[in-house]
Structures are given as C-alpha cells and as structure tokens.
Length: 236
Image 1 (cartoon, rainbow, N blue to C red):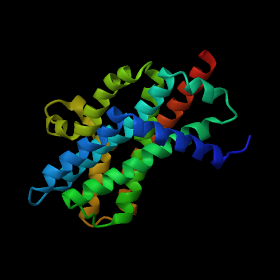
Image 2: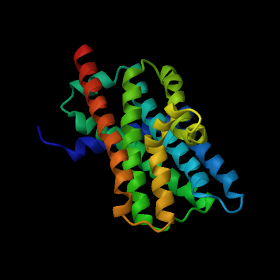
Image 3: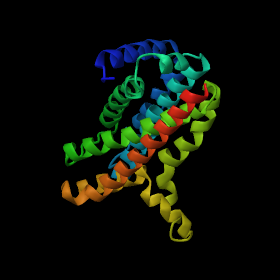
Image 4: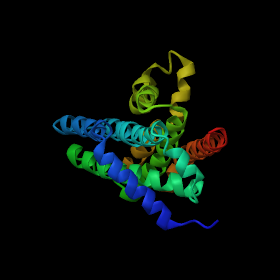
C-alpha cells in the first residue's frame, strides 16, 4: 500500500478541528508563553534560561498535546476505526503528528520572540529543535497509546514534563550523586549543550555528537511507538 498524502491531510484537518473544540488541551500552549513573557522581562538571559522555555514547550506542547490527541481518540473509540481503515501507520501517525509539530514550531517562535533569543547559527539550532520535536512527538504518542483516557494521559505526562522540562535543575547535583550523571544524555540536556556550543562559535561538525544522541532518542522512541501501536491494533 502506497503512502497517501491525501489521507495524512484528512487526518490532520480532523484533528485540528477537534483541537479547537478542546479548550483544556489547546490552552496548554499558553503555559510556555507565560514563562517566556516573564523571562523576557529579565536582562542578560543565559542560553540555559532560554532553553528552560524551549524544553518546557517541547515537554508541555509537543509531548502533552500529542499524548492528549491519541488518548482522546482511544477514549472515544475512534482510534480503532482509523486502525481498521485503509490508512497505514505512517499516515495515521503522520497526520496526527503534523498538528503537534506545527503548533510546536509556532509556540517556540513566539517564545523566542518574547525572550529575545537569537541563536548565533539559526540553521544548526533549527535542525536540533526539529529533531528534538520528533522525539517528543514519539514520546507523546507512546504515552497516549498507553493511556486509557484523556484524564489518565494528563497524569502520566506529568513526570515527562518534570524530567524533560526542568531536568537541567538536577545537573548541579551530579557530582554529589553520580547516578544523576545519566541526565547529561537526556535529549533536553543535549539540546542545551548544543545551543551553548553554537553560541561559543561551534560549527555543525562540532555538535554532531549532540545531534547524534538526540537522534538516537528519536529512533528508540519511534520503534517503541510502532511496537505498542501494532500491539494495540491486534489487541483491540
């Protein structure tokens, strides 16, 4: 069966309409914007402060929004219908992820404007954020598939918001508690390190290691999502 962009766009349009009706989910976009507004009033923001807002956006908007879209489909028993339709897994997940991706990009751009973030190399940073967003979309999809209801999804996503949104707060404790050194390999921390290196004048080749670790998280997240999706397809 060939990939159909028409089916992807049909799923995308349906989810956009459903999102406008769900104020509980759509208003989550306001949270990172509020953070960005308050941080933007401060002087001499560091790269890490800018990325508190960006990582929070990825955790709250990208992961939670995607999780909610999938969980709501399950709660209404409409996901089962999609699974039985001619649409393939890439088409179903692609259509739903497109909504989340577009809203993520818009929110990050607005947040960057509010905080005054202007990266030294826009191209490298943009690539890193796009790759990072793919991980959070995969994570949100996975969490949504595990959840039985939208309310349950709201609870399950809280640790994700905390770890990936504010994980950088634990870095100072890594020397005292070596087990916390694994935090350095989280995608949100790698994104901060990449952005810091870019501001210091590093080029694309210098941050390939950071991008590689983030990409590895994306691959793992996508594989886990497809496995769980197929399992749900067989179980239901």
